[in-house]
Length: 426
Image 1 (tube, rainbow, N blue to C red):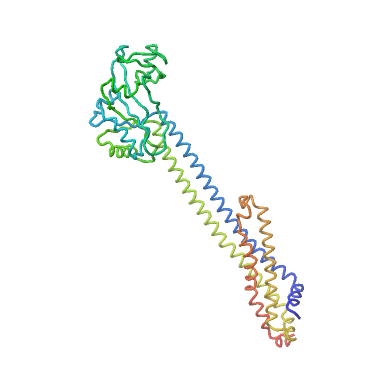
Image 2: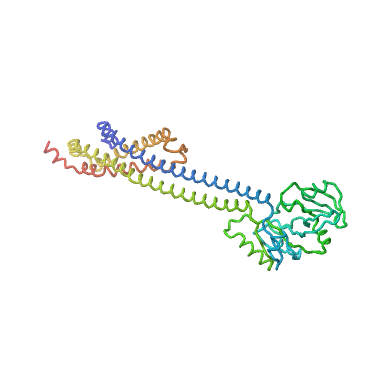
């Protein structure tokens, strides 16, 4: 009797035993594959949640950054640099510095690698009498912003005043009945009204803005200014003004730097706090997802081996019962000359066949489980993302090997049966 015929007759004669072996292997294979897919889907979902949170945070930070930038531009300059030795109480009381400093200071800043401020604007300010109109005004000479030599060009916060143009505040153009295009005399020189400001409710309402160079000549302060205005960068530093003073003082020793508080700065601080809070939330979420993943892996690490051992135990038990029931048949086969190795191989090959068929059935059950429970248990991910083809192929290889291991002892017992002893008792 050939080995193939012996195996086929064994399977036909013990169909129930063979089917139960297939079922046990199928349960073990399907359980392992489904657990792998479940863990993978949970991991992918965690990454998806965290990525969504990170993207949401980045979008929020960009929006806050843009809002702060716009609001700070709307509120104007908030860093003021005054000359060395200037009495700050005088600045606070009259609104400008009486001392001056070289205009070259602003160019020195622009050519440095300064990073804490932008939008450098030199000014010369003085309160005086408008002789022709007999009005007390605040005269400010400005030019265009001085661009920094490094970094991207910034859109100016204020437009330069060119030539003999003049910009006047609300109270002046209202009380003097001046409008854009009018010609006026100021300190003996003719100016053209190029712009009038709406009411601001501050000293700006009685302010006159003219070109810096012309202002310097009218006040006999050529190449001199009494302040440099700047806009601080939106830094995430705790001591912003301290860092600004440190950087500016290294370039312009002796100058005095003050910060004008504003809602924009409060929003900048709020942005920094929001970013820190968001980062903490993301870190906390990552930790929670990691702990949850570890718990899932812990459950699977216990459940899957238990199911596997139970399946292998079932196969071993079925093989043992099969040998016990057929002990007399085995004795007869051995007595007529069937080799021990052939009987051993027949039992092992039967186990291998049942395991291979069971692995195929387990893969089918796995696919059905994915299709039926994809949305509920596997977060609607595609099969290709949940399980590698290599693991499916590994199932077809490992399951027969495990089945052979489980059947080895019962098969060895069957092959070593003494036919004389068995037949003597029959």
